[in-house]
Length: 200
Image 1 (tube, rainbow, N blue to C red):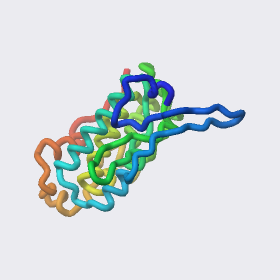
Image 2: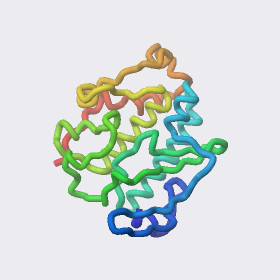
Image 3: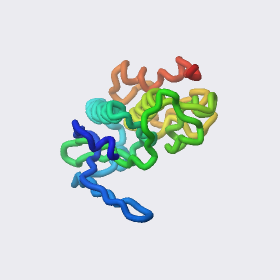
Image 4: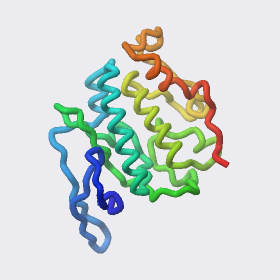
């Protein structure tokens, strides 16, 4: 968070105002964007989210991740509970850097992954190693899928490693795609056609 505090700041990343060091803990004084709700709550309260709304949220999420990378920070735990939305404007804030790492071009060992299972990148299991950029792209893809399908694309590790996407939204499984463009639908399902290779 201290690295993120160095300017320029991003409107899409929660701000650290001050911090205090105590013998065994740190106290962080953070921005409090109010009124807001988690993206998870927003998804649950808005099933069949339209593409315009999903695009607005997704563009902000990408900007938040890019800002982290520009500050040499790998969030390592992108999912709907770690994203806040202002209720009336849908302005986004990426929060909770407790699982974060400093960016490393050498990647990270499997034991260093701290995200939730639904967002595990497949190379975590196929290679035992993962990298910030590919993990971020994977997490953003899963995030977009959840927004337009109201569920996770995978329910276990086998489905993740074999790219077996599940469609529980009956509109999507019938091909109606809840008014999604071909590009968005392709982005959500492209993983089934392009295998992810282990970095060399």
